[in-house]
Image 1 (cartoon, rainbow, N blue to C red):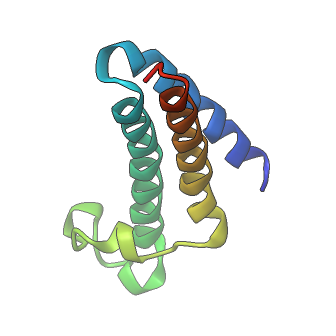
Image 2: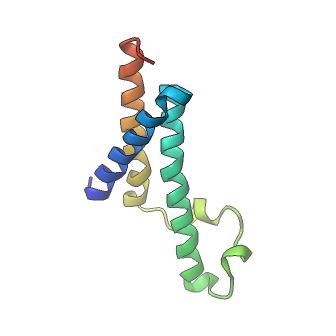
Image 3: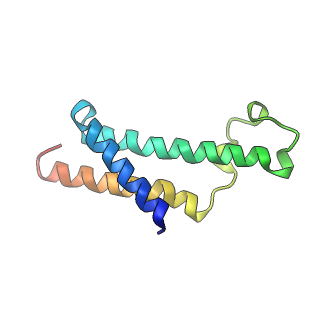
Length: 100
């Protein structure tokens, strides 16, 4: 785990806590995790455009699924999984305490 995983986790927890009164703890956690999933997918789409196999294409010409399939590494998976784990833990604890 590196610094970005920790930063993403803290930011996701902050988003979850801010949205908790509006959406509930579980839905707020899902929204927070979706932010980082979308961010990673967008980064992989941008990397795919720069890749030599797709150099003739623009971002609009790429297939819709390219960000889901191209460029995932252990680091990028953890950029999504670490916030998801912390938000799930927060939702579980809040629900167990009767706060959710």
